[in-house]
Length: 65
Image (tube, rainbow, N blue to C red):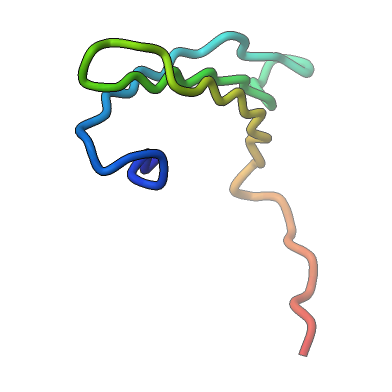
């Protein structure tokens, strides 16, 4: 993540996993939360994202074109 869009001042970011879900025996979803703080350690933003983990062997959809 690039927090430079928030300010020209130095920013700190810390990401932590909140959840690693399972479907069967494999982990297929992950939820991460990132906190962005300014140089004085004031909280500027919190971003929560969900990621879907796909099996590398799974067939991919055909690309348009």
